[in-house]
Image 1 (cartoon, rainbow, N blue to C red):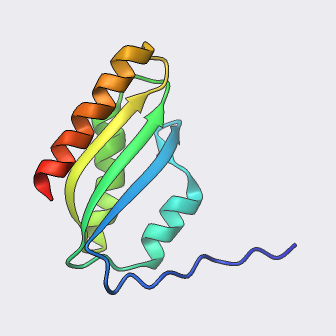
Image 2 (image 1 turned 180 degrees about the vertical axis):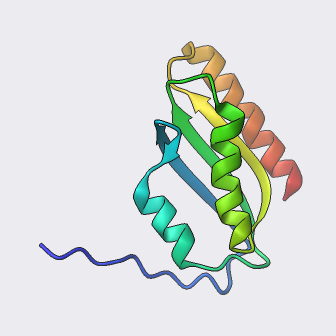
Length: 105
């Protein structure tokens, strides 16, 4: 079965959220390919990553943010949610990040 690339007109976008699981410090190839094929000049962007490894949180989100910035996007937030965190800790972290994003919009 032939796979079609997702074609999206980003011309009128004001904000875009990018989300990906992280495996061995890398975002998934489909998201990386999407970022590399598009231009995000003038668009506010945020990055949400998920993974089980608490180490490298800053490095993982920085790598993803750099890819977007190289394509002209303005990063307004980035976070990595650790899937092995306790449920209440994870929910609190999600609420806090959401609140921070809303305040920037």
